[in-house]
Length: 285
Image (cartoon, rainbow, N blue to C red; front, side):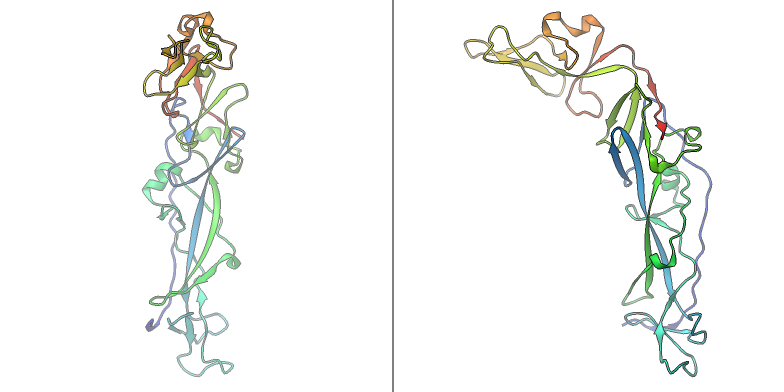
């Protein structure tokens, strides 16, 4: 059972005004850990659920002398002296100001140094009173809670590139530039080099009944097949797929391609990269 106390509450919000430093073009941009991420047609969007809390309080405006709060079940406001309108008690009200909003997924307030270091300053628009729902507490005062989804710029996005844009629209690589999604599709990187997954020819001319198959492994991937006697055969090199390149043309390394073994963000998958890689920042949409 909750005790009966005389209770008046207020809330103070804190605002800080600086943002995170951006990363290099090669690092790309990413949604912070604990934040929600969505990727569609190469567009990366970061969002977060904010929780707003307003506490139970007495008196209510319409029952100004009901200053005593009873914390059993739904908090009740009771009069110190004679009741109004014959009402022995009325449901408590909620404080006019919210406590500092918190990021629900990581349970940190917006002024937390970790939040400021990753997402910068988040300036939410407080929810309407009707958005709050009472949560009863058996040992303390009730709380009124509202949630709000807001969009933020990915970490690493240069501030000057976001001016005049809305983070709800996300970011994407410039037209004609390759897009790479890393870290479980949480990080977006843009570059202008041709990058192709390492693969194998479909047909082994020495044994057409045993086509070349790619064998993914830590370190250099292999093209494997069997000869006509059933023995395992290992090819000399892989090739970049979906480019018209065939093994008979020779090792891709002699034709301007560079093998990127176990390419970062792709597990044990090798890629062939052609030309010098030039990285660039994505653009706000």
